[in-house]
Image (cartoon, rainbow, N blue to C red; front, side, top):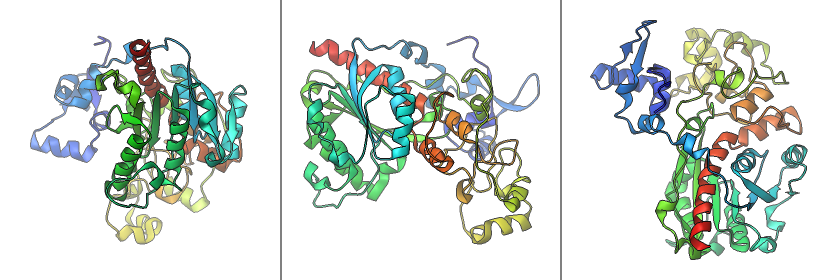
Length: 420
């Protein structure tokens, strides 16, 4: 373990590391399960490293193999296809890990323009995936990836085959895999897919993956982006499949999910000069709040939300939602510099999911959005401001894609060695 790692962790940090709420930590404190100590210098209530060792999430961070995994490089050029590429978050992370994309497909013309502006040499095909013949890429690629939009399947019987998924975008993803025959594929989606349609969608997806000649080398896994140098509480579900003829020569142990970084980055790491970026966030355009909304959000403290408003203002702002159950902690939410951002949405000013700047009363600007998703400052976005927010909000964070990419390169390196 790096001896320079800090000894004490703030309550907000520990809540993030253990993926529990601050309220849960307060209950644990009352029950004596995990009680904060006083920091020897500033007397703040904090947790000592040693207190966290009993928790698996903390152990993974403290014993991280991140630095070793940074050394993973491809033993040869691995060619890939990226589907549903969006603004390029996953593609950029995979490129950084060592993949060379032969084709990127995306239906949104502004997102395609973004890809072409930043990577003129990429072969970007704009249009409906249904119109692409992937048989041309058989024996030409090693890897295929994409975040297919989640749709339910019409369910017939207990086991669905490939043809039963026709009309869904997962069918098109599976068709691309079947036609191009990559050694390995990566599919990513929202966490909610795990329980979508009471779990039937996941059963169908697994069945189709087998039907097209692939094996999942690990159970689908939800990765929390904040553990992978992303200053955001975003979660993505990943599937990693290996072609059956190759899987017969390797084992489940030949794939490992990426190790977490040794600390969690916060909004301050995104917007200010530091370990993540070499300068403060550059100026950019952004949306503004209407006058009354700004007056109300002016009253919300850093890290606060609607419950921190005076009761009469709560009622005015929340309307009928005031009487409903649930915390609704995204409403009238002002972010905190000391915590990762909440998951970015496609619109930073919408009422259900405000992402107000920690100091100024305004929505996050475009470049602030991009940094929270770990895009480099030189990555420019095409289209209107509204469309740029949408592209960034829909993206896989670049650094999460990079961490995942290293695990995939390691797997392909093992395959290369075993089947050579």
